[in-house]
Length: 170
Image (tube, rainbow, N blue to C red; front, side):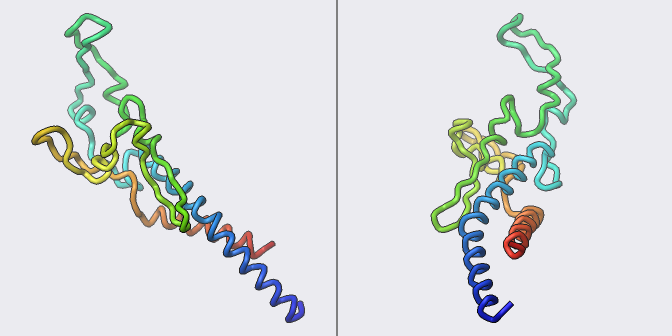
């Protein structure tokens, strides 16, 4: 390779790197983060750190009072309720509501879309363990599912390294 060809090769790589980091990287980061944060719901923890058990499964009582559909006041075993994963509720909307958006300056915003479950502070209360309820209310047990973590950073770095190797080998 001549010095001129080498110089042209470096210019080409520079353009490819800029393009990758301005267009590809933010989207890749968003997809990776959303995927891993949704996975936290399936593993019932934050990257391997288990959430505190919920009372409905903790006390071994898998019963629910029926108020509609069957005889009022009748109690029957509701096995699905007792076994349901933490924070999935009846619908799993909170976990499905995690999305990402690439901002104009190349940054990525990861958020829970409240339009999916209709409760603005709901995700933050669970993720950060904040005050919940009316009046005196109570402090929700922190069950983090979104946030910075070494495993998240490692996945992002692996993907960007893979892409850089792809660029340099073209």
